[in-house]
Image 1 (tube, rainbow, N blue to C red):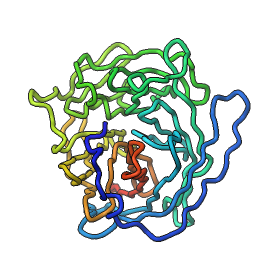
Image 2: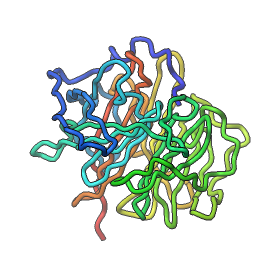
Image 3: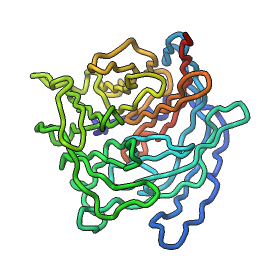
Image 4: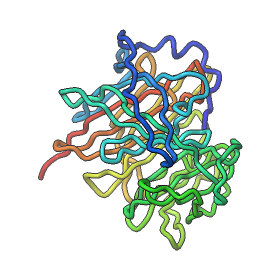
Length: 326
């Protein structure tokens, strides 16, 4: 969901590392596998000017990139991400599934994306999605059994597309919260959970779901969260513990956009802020988060949705979190 289409000159005001764009390494699709190569370039980006980025103790910036492409390429409007075996998996507002290989430098910092490719998501009858109301994908998760689940808004639902290695062109509806979400404020957060998956509504509410149904963890507030509040836009399981990481976004017109990352406990309660991004630092419409186990703790990746606007950017930032050893 995009609450700030009038982004003004914000993108131009944000500080970037001055460096030439680097084309992504090409990928040649295998005949009949459903994936198509996509053109993209990346360039490095830092955290911008202080005090725009505030990092808690034990959190370290581990590199960032801007992903650029042209026109209505599927590598825009990206709403969520997960990392699987070094690959970025993402979905778009237009109903596309995106996959690319993370490129790290010799220090292990995020340096780019290689082999970008896309495929169009399908309806339950196998037809490609063509309408915005059908294809507004906002969240994704790869379950413990290897199935790809995707949450959609406008027509609020969660569909199972089967194993990522051999996606089903006839997705199957699975359990989703029995709640009347606002049209453009749906299940932005989707993550693995014990026995199933956890969904978070952008305007409030957290649910744990399994193949047999969903239970309410935190009920939506009677007065729904507004754009000016911090609202959950992405969720992923903590690989080093029993909780989750949530990315939250706030927007106050005309151009005050902020994002922050917090841990989430099993009961849905939030922890202290780990990462806060705001002007004059590097910030945009962050809607995706992925958590990956590392030898020293956890790496978080944050992804922003540019909403196909030339005034916004597709940012991918990496942060390393130290985990206390007992």
